[in-house]
Structures are given as C-alpha cells and as structure tokens.
Amino acid sequence: MRSDKLASLAGAAALAATALLLAPSPAHAAPPATHPGMTWAKMADGPDGTVQVGGPGGSPSNPYQGDTPASAVLPVLCLKVDGSPVPDGITPGFYTGWAQGTVAASRPVRGSRLNSRNAADSVCQAEFGAGWRMAEFHDGHYGPDLAWTGGWTFWAYGSVPAGTRMWTAINDQRANPWD
Image (tube, rainbow, N blue to C red; front, side, top):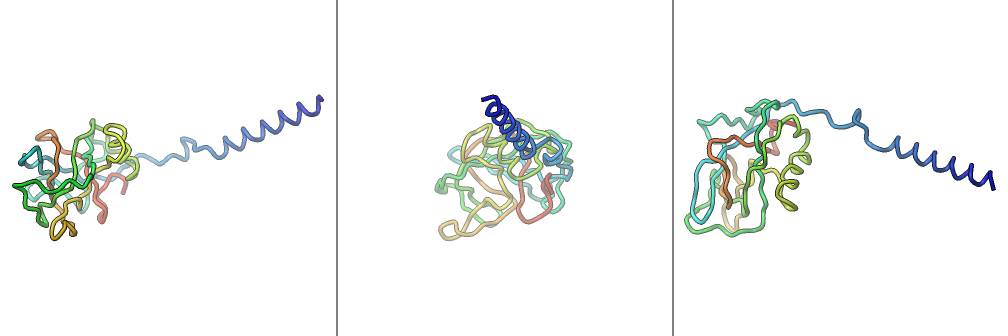
C-alpha cells in the first residue's frame, strides 16, 4: 500500500512539473510594444447618433509609420460591426465609408500594452463585451452593397470624446504599437 501512495505522489509531482514547464511564464510573455502607433480622432457628429472618426491630412495621424509613441496613454477606438444599414444623410465613399456598426472609446491604456492585435482587441472586449474589437483604418465600406473598403475616415453609430486621439489599427502598414 505504501508503494501505491509513493507512486501516486510521484505521478502527481510529474504532472505538476509538466504543467509548470508548459505554462507561459513572464519570461515568455510578449514584450511590451515599442513602435509608434497610428491614432485617430473624432472629426464630426452626424445624423441619427452617428460620428465620423479618422485621421485626415492636417491632423497628426500617420498611417505609414505611426504618429504616437507607445509610451502614450490613450483610449482604444473600439468597433462592433453588426451590419447596421447606412442612415439617411450619410453617403459612403472611399474616404468616408460606413463601418456598419458602433464605435466607442475605451478607457485610456498605455500603447506599450498593445503588443499584438489580440491584446488591442481584448481591451475593447473587456470594456464593451463580445463582438467588440479595435477599429481599423479600412473599416469604412462604400459602393454597391457596401462591397468595397476605403480608408482615412469612416462613419459609425456611437459617441467618442472630441479632441482625444485614440489608438487605431491598420492592417497593411507598420503603424501599430505591436509592429
């Protein structure tokens, strides 16, 4: 009986050691982001509770290299796409697309925390729930059945603070904190 107990204890110890080896450790966690990130701001309020967000010429947004150091503490521009139709009074185009959903600004976070797209999306999900993610430069849709995507700005339902830059992703340039 004593050998059975010893064997059980040895087996449990081996399992615990294996779990420790396989568990992610702080040494293997993704390092903090260090690259400048692209930021957008509220540009205008529109009809029926809509808002235009973007980073057009004249603002400090840089979709090619990022415009804000990862050490900055800013909200994440969050988006939940739900297929909302374009409201009357908005005509989507390449530079002013319709995001088919709602935007909101998260609580401010240090850009260095955004060390992956998943990390950025998790900020939005933690604050607003399932289906929310970080907004992206090309989220604006236009054309027949909103089949095409543009860039630089887009319209969506929601409200974001005026005069506040917000971390915003771009999927085809190195202008994200995690790049």
